[in-house]
Image (cartoon, rainbow, N blue to C red; front, top):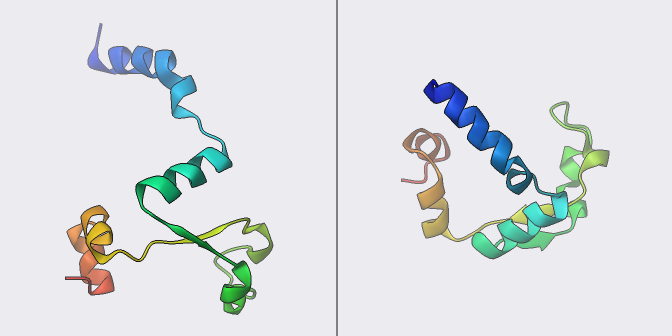
Length: 84
């Protein structure tokens, strides 16, 4: 059996554990990253943004801990956002 087949079998066996509802994902983000919820009215400037559909935003979260953010961003992302 190839590594791919083993990996696929493992995925099939665990796929139920890999699927989360939106609420479960939010709960995990709030807990793991100490995120805070904020009102989407704070980002009204995105209403006409052509990169997203503002009406489909159902939850807004922010993570402000610099050390935590530094740990989750790659070097390239840090360079883009000037987090170094």
